[in-house]
View 1 (cartoon, rainbow, N blue to C red):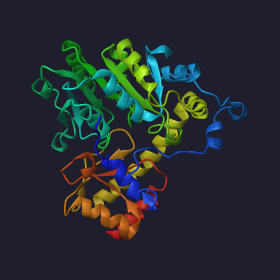
View 2 (cartoon, rainbow, N blue to C red):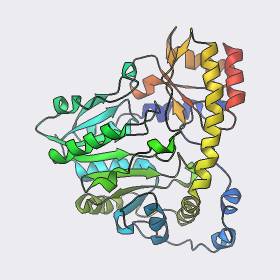
View 3 (cartoon, rainbow, N blue to C red):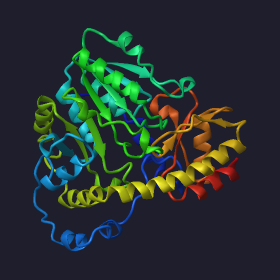
View 4 (spheres, rainbow, N blue to C red):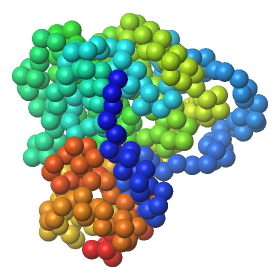
Length: 366
């Protein structure tokens, strides 16, 4: 497998720990271990007694049971825990695809959702979400994108970086298309449960049949990025088993302390969701006001879920703008070019408590 540099991660490596304000973070506000353990009586004492030996390769039974709570029909044996979502993406591509297979990928997207397949010699066709369509995917395009060698469709909803939430009608249409054409559907759901209107929440893809694989993680909606715990949920035994076998060549098993803390977090996830959505809601008000004040310079399609949005810079070059901003004011935004976007967009994060101070600094810069 030959992989190019990961543009987004290399960009963060250059700026992330030098910038005063990360106004482009994709995750929600995190917390200390002490604060997490305080959510549950007795958790701190239990944490002190976590055994620091190897854990089960598929994930601890207790953690997999808690993960099942996110779904309607999944059982612990259908959950495979990974060290973050990135490992799960890589192993899915290796497990499900072979050289010259074709996949269709929701675009713009997190780079590994396509590059892992390209690195194996697969053919990748972007399924473009267009700003003029409010970032909605055109389901009618799917049939035109199909090839005889198409093996899988890759979807991300709620979407990184636009915050778009697929409609239920489109969601069902994509599943029907995948089943009719015997395709795998890899559904990146790492922002699920962060919908601003919970009535619009979609079912989990994995509950729709054995054609689907759901990707989840503790870092985004729940704000527990430092645990480095992700997972896939699927009824597809062939894909599951192959991913489990490949995991023996990567992390083998996960961190025992992280698995315990993830279990506590997911058992109390509604409190984490409520906390982080409250932060996002207040931050959205500030960003709305900011964008209204600078309507001659920026525009956006307001996100519907998740902890980010994707505004457009109307004057100048977005890469130069972001570079100047971080160097002169210590505020980091992420240019859309890190996603391969050519529309002069940038990612703005909505999930951190210090957004008011970051926006104030951005206003001063402008």
